[in-house]
Length: 181
Length: 223
Image 1 (cartoon, helix red, strand yellow):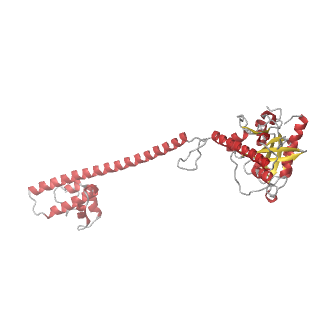
Image 2 (spheres, helix red, strand yellow; image 1 turned 90 degrees about the horizontal axis):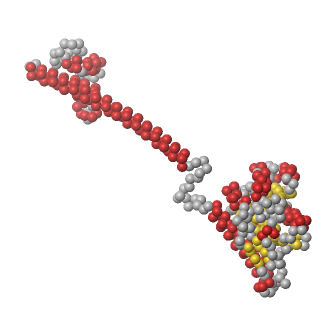
Image 3 (cartoon, rainbow over the protein chains, first blue to last red; image 1 turned 180 degrees about the horizontal axis):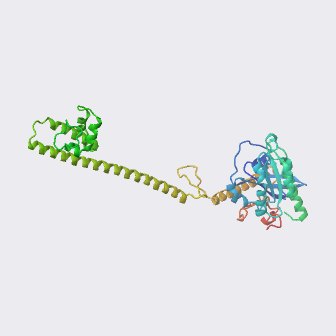
């Protein structure tokens, strides 16, 4: 009898302004590492990470998008296949927070209707440079009925928790709907 | 003698110098130069540099030299008259030449100005027509200039991600063989669906145990 390498495959997508740390968040989660040099993602990339939830091996295929406007035609075509989308902003960058509504609109336009969404305020280790209060992040998340975490890829704060929570939420949906993946 | 201001120099009667070359009158009257100084230098000048003032200097010098010729015979008198007449013609020619030269200079400067205006207008209009607000000028000598289309990039990225997915699957399988979990090749059926729909360039990795159809991987209720 063949051994299966995983039970379920979840496809996740990371979006948000350029430089907020999407790639770093993913790199921390997949490789438990951090790199300070900023390398702008070209178009779209992905990483695989298998986690275990409720006795099930779940393979997460996590798509990392370029935040730069010039790649948007490429990145938006990946929204539709995503089961979960992480919208990342930078707590030290007000503009990235202001753009959240723009990213949410993108999700509405291009993603599946029942996609699981999550808001992340990254770089929470840089308290001295913070310009977006945690309460503001919580408020906007509440308004849109989505989960919120403040994370730090550098200090490894809430990264795994965020991904596992998103995966759990998708798993719950799968169970509730009785849909077999 | 008609109102001659310099009777010493008058060589003819009536005084042609003073009548026909009036500036000699004013010049001498104003005592701008001494009797023995500069006027003779005018003979060293280039013909095209001569001014009307120079012509008056020439007439002054010639008049003075004529004075030195002794006698006042009829031949000398006729010659003096003709010399004055030639000097008068010379004055007219030099005057005309200088005026024409000045006119041409002004004309040239005007044309230069107009040319400059036309050129700058043309430059501005050319910029306006070839480079619009939404257009980009590409330096063809820049080795790092943009030269691929978004579609090409999209295809390259898609291929890269497909190969990456295949590599991951292969690595996973290799790991299973190495660890002895998979004893034979038939047991490991790993399928990578490379026929990705154009709307979502997705990669579907499935195993034989969990035969996954692309639509099954998407949450239901897609639009």
